[in-house]
Image 1 (cartoon, rainbow, N blue to C red):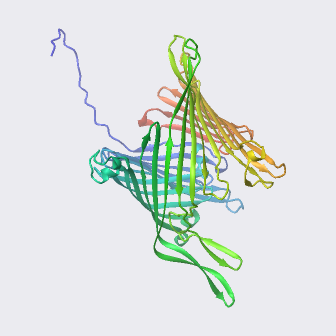
Image 2 (tube, rainbow, N blue to C red):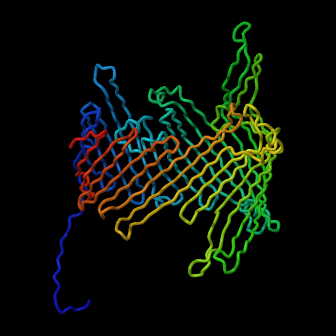
Length: 611
């Protein structure tokens, strides 16, 4: 301790430990148009110990519409954290006794959970559940713009465990997919998987590295998966008609082996894969006399174990060539380097026909006996194919103002690929695809793709087995092309008004045959998307997201957000100026988290708003 000539005053002010308390959540109010005036987000907060909190809120409209929502957030140290959200809404439009009265009830469940990695180092568990009424986001008055535009929501609960000091791991999951447009619900529960990570044959046999060099180079991966699925429209599930739910199950096993070796400057990578499918019920059909002199097809479901399998072998060879174009040592661009990476591969797949046929009179009926299995093995045509690809990039050495040389990529990558099936009866050459990517001036990202076909068409537009070159019509014709350009801007820091913007342009072109004109016609789709924001007067933040369809000549969904920092208070506004979600939302609230529920809110549409 250092002695001081003067005594310094000090004080000790004990502070009571912070306690989480329950309290009322203040609502917002406004005009809901046809639904009437409303009180929104009126509720109560209840702490649950030191690890969780529960919010109970509701909405009520003078027209008879109401909604309830609960949100429980929890965080257990060294265990995990997450949130559970439950919502129910009863939406009423119209009046009793009138022909236009409609009542719509929707519900939704959200659960997100992440287990702390320190809880069990060799295990992982996570959950992301989204389940409810198919029209929830379209009729729910609290859904966001992104939720409103979504027509699919999914759920996933996953657990995995790695076996220490082995390449094996176990995984179990449950999945759910729901389409709000079709109303179809697909549930997979359970999904069980045993995986073997990539490992050499020598290691699996317990051999030391170098003891068997050939086995060191052969790598194996394997998996076995069992799944049970249920499929039905959401109307069937809500009615509890479980007999109409379509159920499937099955198992699939896969083993893949590959290796690599070099012959001079050529790299060769052989590989082989094997698939096996297990089914526990199959479909059989037969012709039976249903009435005297009347024959029909009878379908039977046969219980019992059945299996089928297929395999494939391939080998790929690749190399790389460099070309240098020197433009002078004192030039601004002294040299340009061109890199070509050709690759050629051979593959063989034997034929495997699983479809069965049945003749009834002049009709030939076909079916797959594995049609009830979760993993449906289809027919495989024999294939002996050669695969070609050529990758290219272009780089330049550029001298800057100080005379230093730096490398600049002119074209990041251009890949052209195709394959030729020697065992096909006709149309042996596949479509030729080309993909390109570059970044112009390190500012503009460019993605391009094009697909060409080398075969001619007949008068009906069908592809024939005749090359265009044999008709003198060129080597190939364009079938479709896509282009995407995007760039970002930012600035204003020196002026005290920082801003940023992102602009993306997309173009899609599809070529289809017009029998009347006996020629291909082009269908174009192109649009421009914009998103960005700016800080004004140090306290204002404006963000906008919009776009324009250049073909339909209309704006894409547009939102404008404004946040005004009022020191202890904050004002926020959200405006959707047009479209199905045309609306606005205003909120004035205290910024402190403890007092965030002290707020004033107003919502409306078409200029309807009250305070």
